[in-house]
Image (cartoon, rainbow, N blue to C red):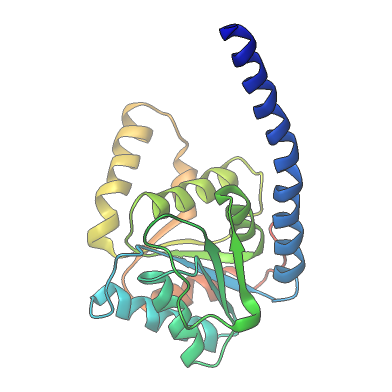
Length: 229
């Protein structure tokens, strides 16, 4: 009897998994249709917990303004903290402000600086990450937590393995990021030979909005802007 119950429950799980495919497809279709119309953008990542009076919030807002003034749109995860700062900077500069929102049991809520027609909701992290990677001309990564590291390392891996076209990966905040990148260099590269030296050329560590814009402008000086895959 117990075995029959377990078998029945397992079959129900498989049925639910099959139907979930249609919801996942719907998120991809909706995301592709909206994002393909927006034009070249730069994604700004960072902690949802960063307060408006924090130096990194203010720096993210300033970077977003400069990015927008240079002709890019700004994409964020749509929530509070650094995401809000990015959307706010784009909004105040009169530029494109996109929010890719994720449903979470805590922390996440839409910030008020996203363009009303460019706020897209997702239930699945992996679908949302595809949108970031496909439609971003660069990643500006402010200090953050696990989600920020996840986005950064996924893009790093995809570029390293040539699954997507190369684009700038810009870490903002030397004090925050230097220890991590020193570990990557010392432990992954020099001690264990787990990566190649040229992999490190994909990443820039900076502290100012001027440096961010210089990297973006130099990278796209002789390149066309288009989706990354």
